[in-house]
Length: 76
Image (cartoon, rainbow, N blue to C red; front, side, top):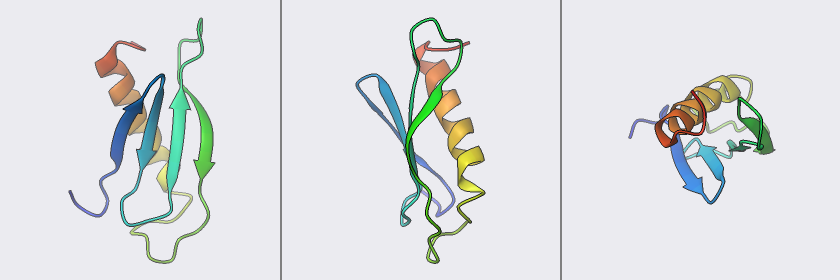
């Protein structure tokens, strides 16, 4: 895993996305009757040791979470 690849894990009804070797992480869930994921818990404080900024992480995490949700059949 490169230092810019996120780790994606399914925990019950949530998708947790984290950037290894950093403090960045976000949890997504899909409410019933919603066509998309929503972000829940987020840890996006600037991390000087991370390979990206706190403002760059959410877009990367969103793409990874949506890919996993499609794989699971949660969204189209």
